[in-house]
Length: 117
Image (cartoon, rainbow, N blue to C red; front, side, top):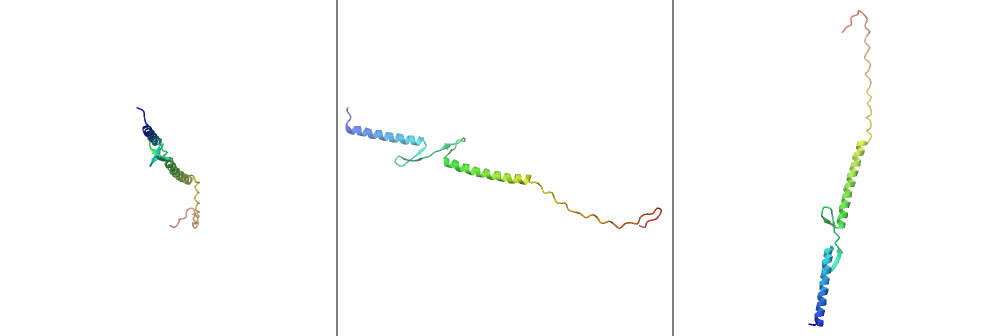
């Protein structure tokens, strides 16, 4: 059987459809999102972390920025606490207590003399 032009044209169309489906499958497996009639949007770049979770680079950047802010606050608060602990303590100013006023001098005791109580 010799293929006629119609059969050859149909075979070429099927071959093109198969190639398009194969490209679509490769794009899906490569992480690209297929939109509508086979056109593709930007690749959905996904990064797998050590814990097995999948994040886009944008999500990872947001997480990193938030963590940097948290650590910045922790370090700032720790530095303030450390400065308060290591700050030289100001010695309390001594309060001057006036010396007691001398009592009225008692008359000198004379040997053999009785002292009134």
